[in-house]
Length: 226
Ligand SMILES: [Zn+2]
Image (tube, rainbow, N blue to C red):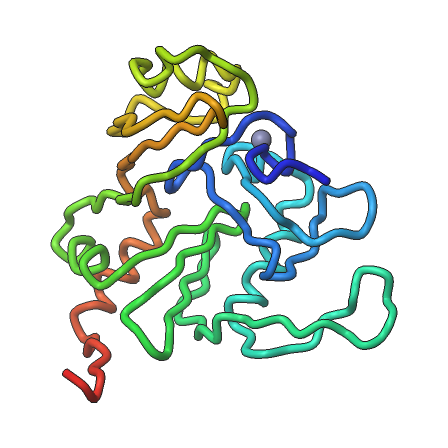
């Protein structure tokens, strides 16, 4: 079984940083184009690896299909019956450009921008409103638990993000200089590091232009209990 904490493309350590390294959960039932035998993706992807991969167009097709789909049947890994049921996100594509596509939720003020090279960015109403005011939103993260693949000693909490990524030999797969990073806790018996990271959202210009105009005539979703 591949380790979900490793990049599923290059196999190197892959701590999650919004906009630079993200996770695909196994229950999404996305075909893994990098696996040697039929598998579903389950784990992290360095966006730098995704962008450089020959398989990124395949990933884009599979990922955006899942975003649009509702419940749909997908073939099991060995083709045996019954097929599996994938729970897509039921989003609507509202923009298609040379570099990216934009999808919108039908039930909440949520958007996903997916670059044709694979990387994706989740946005909320506040983010898109900021784009409309020509502010670059920060991708905030909750506390991320990351199990270190090697023991870096208990001083690991003192490391900066560039220091941590260098110690893991993956500095070249990230752009740590623009990330606000803070280690929160470290649990040595499980090599479990907890941290928060905030990175500026870097979208293709065409997505920024589209969303800035779009948000001006957008009516936020209202729930009956509001
Ligand atoms: Zn990688």
